[in-house]
Length: 302
Image (cartoon, rainbow, N blue to C red; front, side, top):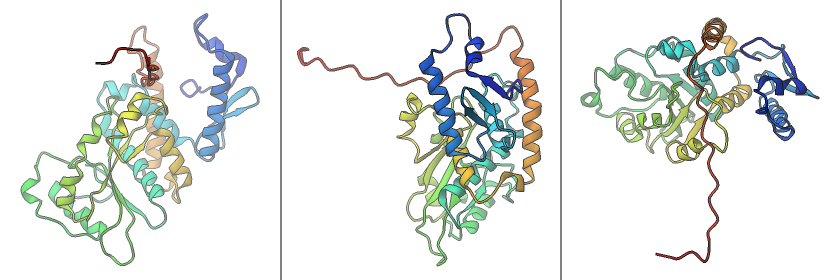
């Protein structure tokens, strides 16, 4: 529906999109409608799809800019991915992550994009940028200059968010986020090293690690279980939209907003052209975690 500009699809039509004998059964379509209703309830102002009676519709009154951008960023065969044009869209994705984290932290929270380049006023050199971020947080710095590599642009983080207290003292929660649109995102949390950052900026306790991705990761995906041990907060597409929906700010208030709309519109057309080619990569889907086998009490023991 998104790529082809289809505004509504009936329940009976859905099965015609699949090869003969491979379409979903009635129970699976019921699950589809229930999931769309759940998402619409979680993010009513930003999630554009609606399941009404026996029809799925795109609600024209919804500002779908953020959701459709994240959808494009999730397509494995998208031209920007094949052509390595990540830098042109990274600042926009980091903006979405920043605003989502501010919403997550609550009233009075602040956030800054730290990836280079960005629009938040960060100095180019990493050492200057570390001092700048510490000053923005109202925190002191450690002796980090000997550890700063001139080839390293961001020290492993793309967004920082925090909620300080009026007393200006440390000991408040800080989130350091790695934002990636790479399909192989499982290892990206390793880019954020809290111990290193705690020696650079005097947080007190270690900052918490966040991974932000544009993909909608199923709750039973194996990768989600693995990431439980690597990050404090996982932000996938649905969580990002949920937090943006409940945030105080709107993306339309930022100068990047029109760029997001134009970029998405252009990339959709390029993606349609690419997918119409006779051959291309098959999109990868997260693996579903297999249930554990029942233990046989009569099995021989070692």
